[in-house]
Image (cartoon, rainbow over all chains, first blue to last red; front, side, top):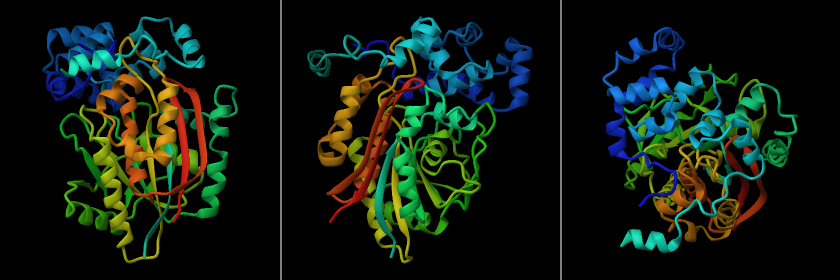
Length: 127
Length: 280
């Protein structure tokens, strides 16, 4: 059982995503960002990432990157390099159009109703 | 002697910092957020703390995946605002208080809280956005800061109970410091938000408002709250709220609520803010 639409980044995921996340950290300097942008595949090949992880980065598929051990605060370095906001990236992960997502937030955000585990589900899970 | 007089709780949303730095705080979207902090900005000018113990989390800035301390205390004389990928925020250098920080480390480690000591740490929006909200845009910050970094990036974060007890240990350490200092403790982060996955954008105002009630008058209820409850009900990033419990633990059992503010949204996040003063 899982919390709907949520990946928990624990030590196991951190181990799986170690090189992916460290690649993301490298984008915190302007020279590295320039090199990455100039030839993304070549830059990614400098890192001991899996082919699947590299492809997810090239595709900017953030849900896939997270399923392969990416952490959202590290992945943020990628969309910051792309000059996209956190809100924009969050919208792409939900599959929503950015304008619709913005509107949803202004109207109070995504409702917890139907988007959380019920106490019965949690009890069943904990057994 | 040093004395903890008051505590502040506040969100530390990076977009709030960007709104200040890009000078758009007057826009309709941001106006209500900044209006919510007007009281605190006036109040802090009156009470003039010497030192703030500022509890925050690093967002893959100073700590990468090589080392992830659960609790870390900044003992340096100064901390540079970090370049988080779009250049450092144009805010003053953060001045530390090495003597008090070292004293806190010495004291709480001997009480079984194994803080990691950090002497070089660039500080990200988690620390500088609360300072901008409370102090505005001065040429230099009006007080010294002791950063206490809590891991909430890699699961599991420390429990709410552990955070609360750490706050109490910090209180004992400050009380035993032999300089006349007016000290505050700030807890930052939250409120409900989820930045990732199909559920991104989750906001739970019912949860948030109950949290704001309980942290003032019934923190013993909150310290029992499980990580699963935070993750499920406040979103994957809502677990940042455990950091408010460090602040609450450092205050008296009885506190006076001087300000409470709640607003949705700032970017992807619900903004919450409290100003609490110790009562006897």
